[in-house]
Amino acid sequence: MGMEFWDEIVGQPTAVGVLERAAAPEVVPAHAWLITGPPGSGRSNLALRFAAALIARDPADRDHVYAQVAARTHPDVAVLSTERVIIPIEDVRKLIPTAYYSPSEGRFRVIVIEDADRMSEHASNVLLKALEEPPERTVWVLCAPSEADLLPTIRSRARSLRLVTPQPDQVAQMLQARDGIPFETAERAARLAQSHIGMARRLATDAEALARRTSTIELALGVSTLGEGMAAAGALLKVADTDAKALTESLD
Image (cartoon, rainbow, N blue to C red; front, side):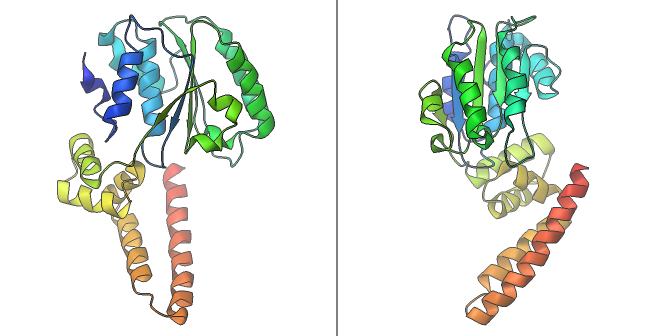
């Protein structure tokens, strides 16, 4: 098992190299990590890959472990994610005790908090206490848009890893390899999505979503006067509302 385990992580060779070295069997990794980067750069996917690499007792087992981690069924990983604007303190309090469980199958127990920037200040302070006295076999992985989105005291206790925005052709190559999408279609979707990986996949596989995205670009580019701007704003609002409803139906 080599670097191919990380193939679905797009345009992040430096970050992948750091995490691959940290997950090596002979290495004792930092007990807390902060993965930051713009939306769509792959923060959460990278965190879950890292979790699997840390848990797997043998590099050959990584793919099997990752499948369980991604499905949230592995006993040695806990993932806190939310669709809310704020992660409530109750959710963090429920998570903290699980950090003190010994790994049942793997080398480490890994706790992943997606969108850690959404924690309230009180929730952040609860997490801080757990980070100050970390169990020996537990690794925390926090994801956020930037380091500035978290308390300085939390940042100081975690090793930071900054992701970059992938290039459109890198996103297109991944969509072509993983989803069988023609490269030209994938690259157009990646450019329209500004290299947001999840959005690019959606645009490349949903003709109606692609049409709505294209219309928003055309509306914005066609504005040259205040009146046109006001009219475009109203039209964009309708497009955004339609897109939001379509995404909600898809998620449901």
